[in-house]
Picture 1 (cartoon, helix red, strand yellow):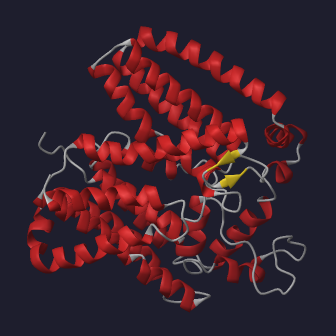
Picture 2 (cartoon, helix red, strand yellow):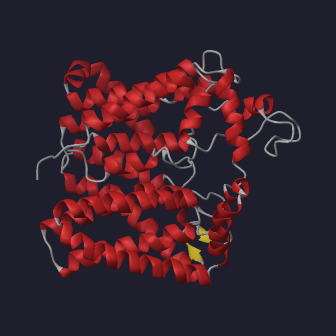
Length: 403
């Protein structure tokens, strides 16, 4: 492996490894962005003539464009302009990684391992915390599994299931390439441990994401063998139901989350949704008042008091700010970037959809699950989610290299 191979692989491998550790993941993003600047200065024609580079650049360029347009008349101009300009580093990171891969392709297996191993480590760490009460991130002192992210940063629940395809898809492909009891056991074992950790992590958004992952994986099995799919589905549903039943009986916090979710049946939707209905109503008011380009990326919390109801529980007593973001991707995009921003995202999604064939196994599925609109979400213009999004887009640009 050449130095260029190793550098490209490091830029892809370091992001998920460093994600749980505060802003540490900014380091590979910065290095990739500097590489991207060099690549554009030296090889911009080659990059534009490469269809994959062009698609990645257009997709993340539209992500930044939506932010820049929203900042023109943002409620908090400084915050929106800072966020919009900073988003350009994500575009440059993806370009830098793609350029390195053009210069020195890296074999699928290495990149797949770099993406899958951190996810596997989070699963094992979460399992250890479920069994012992301790993980790399510290003791279990929150109301759910926190894993390597720690009890003061509960991102394991929503993020792990979204990235699960990066672990499950290569294991499934391995089963197809070398079917044996061992390869099937690895796949089923990984799936069941994921199920356990995702359930006990207590994020209902994560539960929906993992249900979507399970459905997508089931479709892959059906494509290969419908008869086998029926048997696997029966066994999986039985085991998952057993895990859920045991977790409900043994974990007070898991039982409380399930019971709270079931309050939909009694008509207490706001309590079941963790008080998000006022946030969504306020987001709707922002959209009605700023339909074209929104209130500005990351200006949601500062615009909130002006659009909230008088008795809104999310408004700070000082009256200067409210909920941090809309907690739902469509509402976030429409309230912060308007119809213009949503159109930019749809165009970006179209470009990335065209890249799905030949992309790294699991990358397209992970992007789909992460941005699935019928769910609740973390803020997509936050530094954390921006890094995750750009990393997955960069993975979409990986193509088969030499063995």
